[in-house]
Image (cartoon, rainbow, N blue to C red; front, side, top):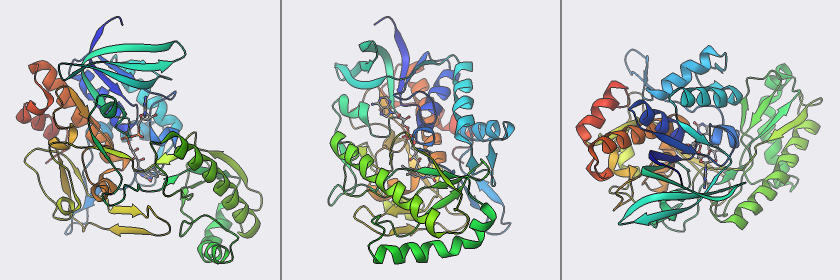
Length: 419
Ligand SMILES: Cc1cc2nc3c(=O)[nH]c(=O)nc-3n(C[C@H](O)[C@H](O)[C@H](O)COP(=O)(O)OP(=O)(O)OC[C@H]3O[C@@H](n4cnc5c(N)ncnc54)[C@H](O)[C@@H]3O)c2cc1C
């Protein structure tokens, strides 16, 4: 152990990258630790794309009111400048995202440690003083005054001894895991004409036992590369995403589903005759796993009531989009034009935490609430809020629960993360 950073962020997804950036811009000496070889998190490692909607529509003027701004807006602008953003600011090219994020972070002198897996936390006097990571050098310790857990799975919170919940309350089942994949060489004109025939035939094949995948339909998105389609359509249920053996079994089963789906398309759907299976994601995508238990637990009623909390840090309105944790089907609750909810700061740290903040899809919430705020734009804003909070706490030497809320909200208002 050589030095003590002001802040260590674990996880380089949208939440972690934005947290590190926000804190470094406020003058903190920041280290970011990531188990893969790049930034972008689910977008990079799990091939998740596109951005789900990060705006509401003014019911009268019909104009877009953007809810996710600040660093997320900078990322959108950066992608746009690189020619890596299309379809109204939703479809992006993840290879450009990776390089854009690394440039943004290196510009702010954030220290980066890739290919390093968080393995533990050293806690003294109720404070995390250091983390341990495993990499090619063995096990190493890194010390800091503050920490942000942006692992998606609340790994650091667990290692530090904070309790978490898993999935839905009644049986702890999580939303399904999905191994995304891409198909190249598709004749897109023919595909558009045959698109409406895919689901009826897929469902017929399911009834006949020729398709084993339990997902109700085939979920297809366009891609920025010509002739390539993106599939978010495998479905693994009743497996625990933070149990190593369960996740391994999920990977094995999902890969069989990929081939099953690809062969179905190639053999039966016009436009796929000359297509090739291009790639599967480096890792199966986890929609939901552990959530911390914070000073407040965000729930579905808060969202439906469009609650504006006094300690709001971000706004959200993506539908409560629950892919059935037990089998087929997906349920939705849609917000009306002009409606949005907020997420309170109290969801961003575990009860009793002195110097640990949490950002991204594992903040303190129920299964139902997580189904809405989990999308990339909102996770990015949660990260920015956590990074800004860490900077304010570091300046005041305060525990995270005692953040100067006025200072934090003044920053967030200036960044248009809250209104
Ligand atoms: C299949 C699927 C489809 C989705 N579809 C969409 C969509 O279309 N649009 C949308 O906007 N959102 C979508 N989402 C949701 C969204 O992608 C995620 O909820 C969001 O990216 C979470 O951001 P995050 O920063 O909290 O976590 P992540 O993006 O998961 O980032 C966490 C990072 O931490 C790293 N990490 C984890 N554990 C450790 C460890 N122990 N040590 C070191 N590093 C670690 C990981 O490698 C990763 O880079 C989808 C998610 C899935 C799984």
